[in-house]
Length: 342
Ligand SMILES: CC1=C(CCC(=O)O)c2cc3nc(cc4[nH]c(cc5[nH]c(cc1n2)c(C)c5CCC(=O)O)c(CCC(=O)O)c4C)C(CCC(=O)O)=C3C
Ligand SMILES: [Fe+2]
Image 1 (cartoon, rainbow, N blue to C red):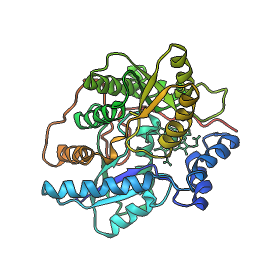
Image 2 (spheres, protein in one colour; image 1 turned 180 degrees about the horizontal axis):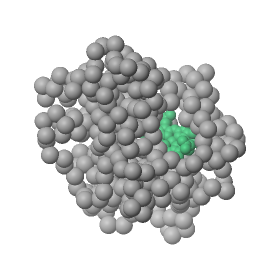
Image 3 (tube, helix red, strand yellow; image 1 turned 45 degrees about the vertical axis):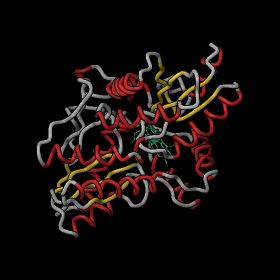
Image 4 (tube, protein in one colour; image 1 turned 180 degrees about the vertical axis):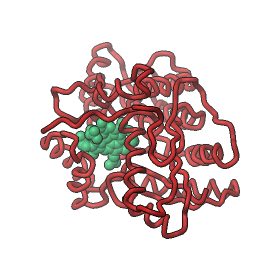
């Protein structure tokens, strides 16, 4: 192995970036223009800058340091699906630097189309763009049940709950169309691999914190209202909890790795405002990308390949993600929905 490619979603870094970034994200996906206008406003209210690139760069720095401490000599490159540095450009640079074979760390712990298979498509597209001499790319596995991932979230929940006498623990992940969740995992398994892994990670974090009752809900839905997405939404769920007399919530965004814009807008802004209106306490657990254990996690996933370090997992729920050059994990695994005519 000659390098590690850190493959992420990307986000705008100036007000002028926002619209073209959103066009890239939603290219041909039937997201209505009104939704785009609304999301543009979320980004612009943060000065047109998503925290995601900064958070990735910080996590990459920490990972380079951790690799160095382990004596692993692997340069780390950064490329995104939707915004600069674009993965096509990064891969061209890697080829120019003489990289012939690289591991890929996708910044998602889960299976599913958006969380896994679409990163395979990114790998395929980038290799096609580079053409002859494109490095071989080996994607690292899903890590939703890795003890370092679970441990970082569990400590974040404890920290968020510090000042609350009584609270309900609520996990969130990015909603997806119900059809996408049903198509997640190999068809023979009957679907639901994404929501199943989210449920499993939530169970493991709750168990580690010592909380017996909790909820798993969804956030950041988009798409036209007539298309069913995973529910309930976190904001609606707060109404239900308030109706039951719950005094406070701790929200744990277990579906994400960093405190990017969907976390700071949908949770710290929208959900927090609803909680305030309902007179409920609200605290949000930090995502793990800034925790030193996150860099150690990446190094451990790398070491599984370089030196056969055994995979550490806290569950036996199905997991995959590790494929070469953008191949799907299994035949028809997380098959994308057919493009509907607009
Ligand atoms: C499962 C999942 C993850 C978790 C796995 C992973 O992390 O990869 C994730 C992450 C993220 N999603 C993000 C941003 C957006 N997602 C959108 C739209 C969509 N996401 C979807 C799913 C997911 N998304 C889906 C099914 C759509 C509908 C359109 C489509 O089928 O693709 C849109 C379009 C506008 C809107 O409708 O909201 C935006 C702007 C950001 C960056 C935030 C920042 O800039 O800081 C991140 C990390
Ligand atoms: Fe998204």
